[in-house]
Image (cartoon, rainbow, N blue to C red; front, side, top):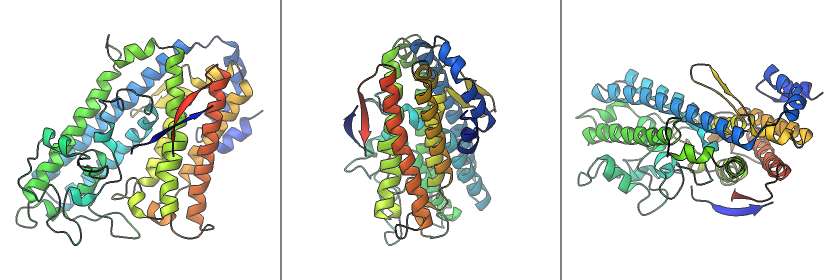
Amino acid sequence: MKTKLLHTTTLAAALIAASPLGLVGVAQAQGTTAQAQQAVTAAAVAAQYATLVHANYEDTLTSAKAMQAAIKAFTAQPSAEALAEARKTWLAAREFYGQTEAFRFYGGPIDDDKGPEGQINAWPMDESYVDSVEGKPKAGLINNRKIAITKKALAAQNERGGEENIATGWHAIEFLLWGQDLSETGPGNRSFEDFVDGKKPNADRRRQYLNVVTELLIDDLSFLVKSWAPEGKSNYRAKFARGNMESVRKMLVGLGSLSRGELAGERLEVALNSQDQEDEHSCFSDNTHRDAVTNARGIQNVWLGEYKRADGSLVKGASLRDLVAAKNPALADKTSQQIAASVAAAEGIQAPFDREIIGGKDAPGRQRIQKTIDSLTQQSKDLVEAANAIGITKLTLVQP
């Protein structure tokens, strides 16, 4: 989504209740004073962030490659079972990618002028741009045999003629795996026979498209892993690690922008106001509720300087919280609690999201989403205050 810019200027029990980290949260609260007494540097925080970012992108790439293997197996021999497995791997990979959204909005390698973000995760998607939909059996690039299905060609078609003309990325893959969501109680239910020659027109091109668009996603994720790789001497990570307070500012811009403008605004508030399924993030798979959770968790990861890897190990080190605690321990604790409350609120949103947004003001689903929006909005204000506490007086945040 394209966005506009806006310029903006003892607790253990509470943490147990509010934080999904449980006793870890208690330990963090108890250690706040000791951490504040230590000399936490901006350089250490930036270095830990770079380590965390690389680990998260690496797990995303690994899980996406598992998805690619499942998709290759499915397209080689389409069946209901193979399609179900491909869908399962898409959902698993999204759990990691969703957390990386906290690394955006400050002109990093994913979303600078040449960044691949729009090619990776653009939405909402006009599905008829890619394939046939109800009432339009000949729609889409797949059914136009004059259009080449190559990585270069699909990249060129992405967002061509309009922001909703999405041809690549997670949501193009999602649509091909699930199809249109025409159910009020569940996700899309595309038949595997759409990929079987003789069962559906252009099945060969549908198989080809799914494989090519997945390979393009792997290429883009590989670029991001390389951009943040520790062995790079002139990659983005090397420059970021030398940025000190400027890098810290970028981290806070990313968290504040995702908190209010993107997650609370574009991804939740817009759909809540419109009550339109077309405005939900992962509408074909009904995975939007998990998108909200993983986005909120990504913010928490960066704030705490920690990330739980796919293998269960914990990446942990100097954090924004530590840096703020050295100046204002109470504010650091307050912000930690608010961020934990946002994660908990997001976890309360139920599937399918397109039913949560329906109804009057007092509808339970709408209240759950509004609670999450309110918490994210407050945490964005806390993050601005936290930035001020460490001497960053102006942040340029994404506006909803």
